[in-house]
View 1 (cartoon, rainbow, N blue to C red):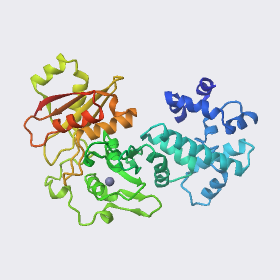
View 2: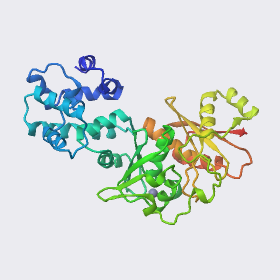
View 3: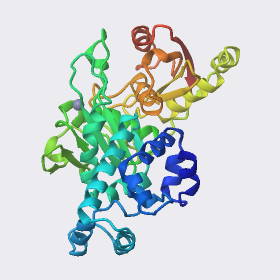
Length: 397
Ligand SMILES: [Zn+2]
């Protein structure tokens, strides 16, 4: 039935959505719901996207009427779609309402529970439509399932952060802790969300929703973001706030970066590094070209305006997947992220990997630079991925 469903769906968002391998299972799952069976029984033999609520069926008719009164965010064409669909189907307003909310909640919860950390703009728009929510409300709604993806073996305190980029994508973040290592290795949920957006080349975060008030460390870390003063910050069940309220009289990037053209965190940058001849030869000898290129790319994208010591890491897992991350500095130094931390964010966000699945790690940095990561990366890898081999490649400008 999943294949039949895929063939019959109109060419909309759901086509690409369901065609992803992990969502093929959703098609089967939702085909079995009473909702879909009910539509088939009513003679709507073809399951179209609206049966999943994306084009309107699942949107509550009662809420549509609210929209017509002018206090919701729908546009005219959406209302027309809703009207057409709801009149086609002989279901009560209450039934539509319940089905809409329930299906939408399941979809969002399932997507997050399956370990997705990035949602494309089209998916976000579909979720908003299904749940009849604004951007801000959707971000807040996604916090709860997101927190379950955290890995806090020391504190047992689960934190979830949901950020929306100016592209319209939504990025999730969770806190990571590492047993038998110093607490400084921990990654906070807001840092995870920012590193997640960074690897997707998002250029600014316009809103953030978090399960608990951002700690001082994260407030300082987020001060590196471009146009951060306009970023809406919503702590669950609290009014919207902005960074100037949370971090007044701050020490910020402008205190150290006197050239206003210096790219801020998330903004495009290239650090101009190449591998030394010896490092390039080592890559060839050890069959590390692909992972070496990834590490060099991460070093060239690293945000290190304060030390000017860029570094990047790439890891290869047992199944051959490669993940990369560059150093991210803070003007206050300590709240920054090491290339290992940003790489772990990528390995979890992209592949959902356990740390011990990492087999090979390649670090690119400048030899003799005042800031270096090789020894710390080696120590940490010994703890979290004891079988991983670390290769350090020297770069030059
Ligand atoms: Zn924090």
